[in-house]
Length: 118
Length: 319
Image 1: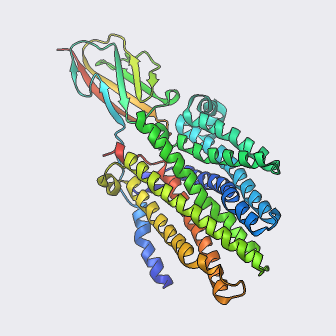
Image 2 (image 1 turned 60 degrees about the horizontal axis):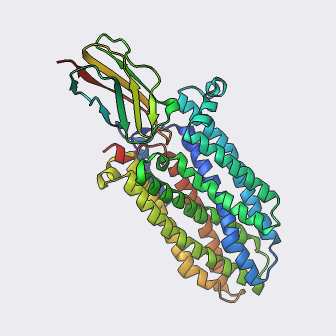
């Protein structure tokens, strides 16, 4: 009986330790929209997440086509929204990289791009 | 540590589980005193001293473990939030930033204040107001955990519903699982006393605890259903994610606990009304004590799962 119980535990233990890494898509949407094209350089980038954020440990950086940072630094966080002001950076592909801490203490990060120009 | 496909911070999961269980034990002991022990002792016209001392001891031990594990959780959480080691988080000021600028820190501070109030009440426990205040502080201490978890970050009106459901869930779990420890002590304390008054006290206490258990199970099912609807969102989310599998594991242990509680309520408890010297009563009493211990072990397993569950991304954000 005892051996049977132990054998029955083996699949459970394998099931506990095995598995594949999960992707965590915490960004809900952004403005400018992810992957989209805008005519002129935006004054700010705003990101909306699926949960409320902690401003003390949430950051976002934006670089222009030349790889120069064009964000003003400290983002503004309100609820599940994070915004950062931008300096004019010309046209081309802009990279947005974010790292946020949600109120339930989960840290997630990610990045996306958008296009500026005709 | 890898659990259901997700990387889990092992020490954090263990500390979280210990903290949740200790908080439940503290609040559960005080709920047990107010809803089970005191009314049963009054009805049986028995002196409260010995049982009361045991319940207070459970509450004190629970509170001490809550404080130590809470401090460790804060330290580990600060390191996790800042991306530093624990030592660096202590020296760099990250822990102060967490305390002053995050919801987790604010909740930790409020719960620390509640712990101090609870300790003062437990130290001056003779007055009725002190007992009611300690019960209130204990309930707030356990309910406050809702603001440090997934429920605390849900946005909009849904967030209010989520927080309410989660706070009720935590309190109901504390009433049931936390109350099992003083129940086991009460059942074990009268080993040598086979008198009619003692038998009546045991029967009444078990009956009252069963009623408390039924209310707790109903609350757990309703609030757990709301939590699952908000955090899992779909059947696919339940079976395709680590969070879902952990939730199903928790549900399985919960069902086994309910099965034991049902046997206790409908089969064993009526037997305690038999004559104190009867063999049937003695057998049922021993079985009840054994089942109570088994339920405590299963309750600890549930808190172990909760320790990991709170660190996983909810399926509703992944699907």
